[in-house]
Length: 343
Image (cartoon, rainbow, N blue to C red; front, side, top):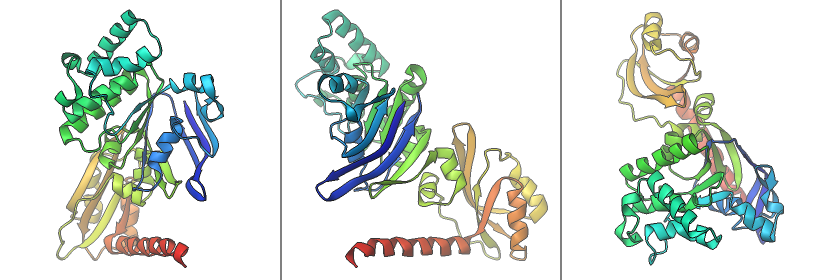
């Protein structure tokens, strides 16, 4: 559905996006994450062609939008609906009138406008607020109207640019459920630009991390969590703090298989002795389990045996002290890279 290849964007001598490659399949939700200044907002503006890429292609349904201009570009843009962080509703128009705006701009006949606006208000659960003005709506309600307006021209792609930022947990959950329903019921392909990892875990099928204008890691959410102990993996499935385990050696465990049995912990206990669970986060990502745990084991156990026993159950294991050393080393590498431009 969406194919982004070799996408770059420069402002003068400043390169903001550097060779972005990203693919999103039909009826999938992909999330792009990254810190402030990583290039997320610029990427969003390039995808909906509010900004012209310096080079590269953005293909939607086989059509390279970056190569279009004039009328062809205006027609192609209808394939991409956009929901902004603040919904950007016109304050002097009612909810229904805001949704109708792009339809009227395209010259859609009044009966069809009324029918489609009614359908969209019902879809986002806001039919009872049709005649309310933005000032009379909560933040979450305004976002629902923004999503309905983004769907008014029946796009195949919906771009959500920080659409849940600043909303309370209940409103955020409602918006995520709505986006998931659009994917499942209407087959809309959704690209979410966000810095909120809970949003990614809540709805995304795949994730890409943007850093200094480059994608440094991407894949399905479950695969990213299982295949590595990267910063993105830890952010997607963060470990709660673990208490000290007096008299035990502390280990950090991570599911690395999508076939981890629910009874694995008791089976490991039969081989290694008592397992003290100090902290854990286990949930499902799509159809597969993902998890991180901190456990305490008998310090007399041979390290290689612990690793092998847990590997047999689809679980990766590292001594917590070794993991901290790796984290410190990565932090030193990041500091060195940040210091390079000033050298």
